[in-house]
Length: 290
Image 1 (cartoon, rainbow, N blue to C red):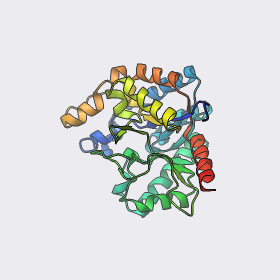
Image 2 (image 1 turned 30 degrees about the vertical axis):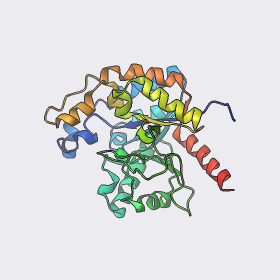
Image 3 (image 1 turned 90 degrees about the horizontal axis):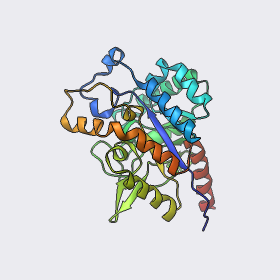
Image 4 (image 1 turned 60 degrees about the vertical axis):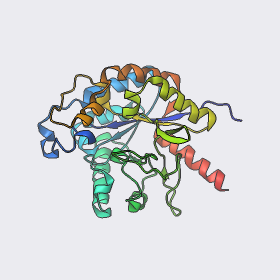
């Protein structure tokens, strides 16, 4: 068995505190420009963390954010990180038809590439919203020349999830080289459990994430895919008091401890950019098919 360390995929979904799914029914998109933005300062803190740990990652960025923060986009790229697309304004894929989805990902890509001065080859759907309802999404991504997507959560969840999807990287289209890299799940009691970051990482003890990543790396010899958001390291962000209690609990729990947990995570495991992971996973798929 190959005993070399596995390089996991580390990613940041670049969106501000008011652009999250938990608040989409209480904060109108038309009000976004009037709200205090905190994404730049939070991303700069993340860049410092990654520099200290000497790791590179992928920043899946909203076109809305890139349009207003071109200097930040260039700073991310200049530091050697990948910049990829998170769509334009965090609308979930299943709220589109194929034509409007095509417009959204084309618009976001053009804005991000212009801001960052680099080519975008990766895409992550807001709230992991590619699922069985959107068979056309992969066709559109492939036709627009994307190399990979990381848009599937292969679990059941109240906000998202495609339970029947493969747990690890797969090619969704027989005629395309496009690779889908799902966010990480682990097996607990014979069932899949979400273990790829975000709120699960922030709320649950760090020991759970350590166990899950070790299971994927050591037992299954596969890379983990981990994500988080800049607002998750920001305990001083504004509070949305009119949001449902469940949404507030989901969004605000353990914000003060997130940065320290991330520091432990990035030093304990091996991490790299998602585009490089996609390249390795595509090569692995070709070897298995040969």
